[in-house]
Image (cartoon, rainbow, N blue to C red):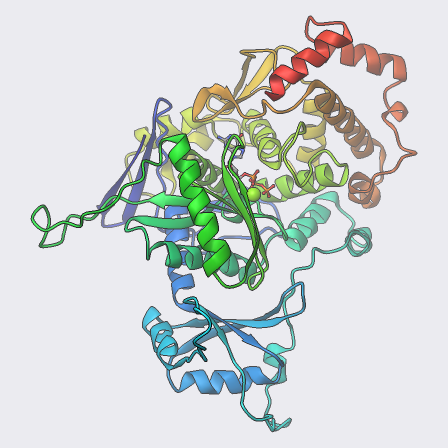
Length: 553
Ligand code: GTP
Ligand code: MG
């Protein structure tokens, strides 16, 4: 159960979030002009106007409600479309983009949702009696006659850049990295090249709002919100869009309160079977009624039942789950950690890219480490370096500093630990070193307290769930995958130590078969090291396999 209490005062508001047993109290502030001032890394992004997670979500949702998506056939139509729409609505922004299947769209932001309503009123549907036409939030701009565009007056510069969704290819990244001298700057480059763009964030929230729009016709208190890497600050171009159905409590300010009520049909979403049934229905509605939705797959027997689908118009691969508030709180926590120090995001982006290119993480979940668990490994390491506070410290320091003065709790926490202004490059190197020699055999990572703790079972990799310490977030990782991961940590550590600065990141993110860890650790030492460090008291292969099977279960 999570209780969110808002306390208003003249400076802004503090968001207190209490999570079940863990009782984390994250106090955040409305305006934080320069939260990154605690670290002095050059070239990193400075947040001018910091928003709390809840404020960011609200801001993006409002933005999405004021936006429309319009399909066009020619770039030259944009200026004409704009002039046409301006007769009915106030236009604030226009973002043209191409989808993977080469359709052209514009995302048009109006100044309010009333403008969107005005556009809906003038749009027509050429309905024919043989078909039922579904309601749609998408428009098509189709000039009836060939437009005679005056090339002199056409403001092509504004729209010359058509965004697309291609992930930067490795060759291009390599070429650019080779031109950058320092490893820290190479990491900053990677971060800027890979992070999701402004348009992409808008399309993610638009996609969520679109599904909300349909479901709100059927369910009074249901909205669809993005979570995971789309909103936690660690999203890379092309990452999936995780969506969840959020049930809201009713507001009690209506005059009919308690006297004049809706008679509703209720679905108990806490019941797993009902949850599956609910998603089944939602999946069918999506497949049948929502334009642009394709490849709908109902994966209802998974640990977390989901509907997978693709939105062709916004170019998003989506996973929709039923209510899962822990996942949303987890996104909030990661978002907060990403904001506390400007080195966090470039470090996470570099390590995620490295892991993906080494095939340590994969698109689908399986026996290997997920991006989410990998991110927790990084955040835990930063806790041990006194760069990030543990959840317990967040609670203690936010309770102590009951003032509203800019992340006061964080400043106070900073003053109690030794200051750390190590470069990104050093942090990366030490990250690989830390996990190359970590005692995975007996120790688990506890982000709640920022310390290692004895593992609670034989899972090879044990990361205590920050909000529920009785759960292991990385239970899926098998011994063979952990061994592979550690081999790569060692290999990466070796590259960091022995490469020239200019070559370092290129070598790290490009798999080179010739470069094995033997260069740094001789074979005998390696196998001894691995036996000693990882293999619990189960020596024969059969037992090992049995154990892996149990863990996967
Ligand atoms: P990418 O999609 O790989 O970019 O990263 P992601 O962070 O979005 O990961 P993923 O799509 O696998 O999961 C989405 C979110 O679900 C994560 O950010 C977490 O908030 C949550 N999540 C994922 N796995 C777990 C888990 O094992 N336990 C818990 N409690 N939450 C999880
Ligand atoms: Mg995701």
